Image (cartoon, rainbow, N blue to C red; front, side):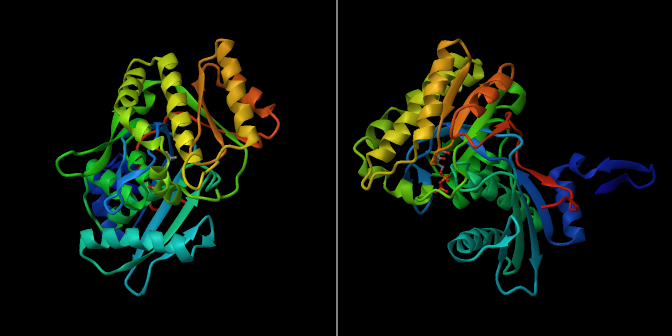
Amino acid sequence: MWCVSKANTFQFTAFHQLTPLAQYGILLVMKMHATALAHPNIAFIKYWGLEDEARRIPSNGSISMNIGGLATTTTVAFDSDLKEDTFTLNGDHVTGQGLLRVQHFMDRIRRLADTTRHAHITSHNNFPMGAGLASSASGFAALALAGTAALGLELTDRQLSSLAHFGSGSACRSIPGGFVEWLVDPLTGESYAVSIAPFDHWKLVDCIAILSDQHKPVGSEAGMRMAGSSPLQEARVADVDRRLETCRQAILNRDFESLAKVTELDSNMMHAVMMTADPPLYYWQPESLAVMSAVKAWQQEGFPITFTLDAGPNVHVITTQGVSKEIINRLHRIPGVLAVLTGAPAGAARLLPQDSPS
Ligand code: DP6
C-alpha cells in the first residue's frame, strides 16, 4: 500500500516508511485490521522455569538472536458481528487449547483498548511448528503487534514486548531487533526484552538441522512446570548471571570462542535439568547427539561453530556467514538430517502493508 505524504506535492511514501503513529492512523481510518510479521528467536542463554506463573516472570534472564528468513505473519481483523475470536494457522482452523490460548491473549489486548469486539486471526508460519523452533515466540510477537495496531493502540516497544510475554515467554524477545535480552524490572516485576545489539552487528548464521518436524510430546509450558523438580535447576539459576554477562560481552565483542563456550554450556545445563526432572524429559534424539558430536569435531578443525537445542530434537548450529555454506553441506551429509533451515540475525517485529499475504 502506498500513501500520499504531502497532498499537494504529489510525493509518495511507502507504508513501511511512515512512523508507527502514522501507520496506526491509516489502519484506523481504513478498517480495524492490521498485519504484522515477527521472527522466531534462538536463545544462547535459555529461559526455562517460572518464578511467578501468573505474571509469567521467568526464573532467570535470557539472551537470544532473532532468526531471519523464518517468520510468522499474522493478520488480526476485528469484526463487530463476531461472537468469539477465530484463529486460522497455516490454513487450518484452530480449536481447543490452541484457540483458547490465543483468545486469552486477545482478552488482554481488548482490556487495553476497552473494547469487547472479537477478531478473525489468520496466521502463517514459513517453518515447521512444534519441533523446538519457537513458533510461539514469533506467533505471539506478531499477534501482539497486529492486535494492538488493529485497535489503534500506541504501545512503546517495551510495553509491546511485555504484552507479548504473556502469550509466550520467549515472544517478548521477538519484539526488539537483532540480539536481545529479556529483563525483569526488580521494582515493578515488569517483564520485557530489549535489543543489546542490532541485527547487522555480527554476521552469524543459525543453520538449523531439522531432525523431526513432528510436534514435541511435551510442550515448553508443561515442561517448565516440572523444572523445579530437578535438583539441578537451582544450580542452573544460581549461576545464570555469570553466563548472561559472559554471553553479553561475547556478543558485544564479537568473541565467537566465548559465545560458543557459554552457549553450549547453557544448552547442556537446560537439557540436564529437563532430563533430571520428575518425570524426566528427553528432547534429544540419537541424531541430535550425532550433530552435536560433528560440531565438536568441526570446532577442532578450527571452524567458528557452536550448537544449542531448545525444547525439541533439532540442533541450532551457529556459525559465521563466511563458512556457513561448507557447514550446511556437511550437515546435509549427516544421516537423519531431513533439512537445514538457515537464518541470519533479523530485525524487530514490524507492521506490514494491508495487502500482504498472511
Ligand atoms: C527452551 O517461550 O515457548 O525455547 O512461556 O511457556 O510459552 P512459554 O514457553 P516458551 O519457552 C521457550 C523455552 C526454550 C528456551 C528459550 O527460548 O529461552
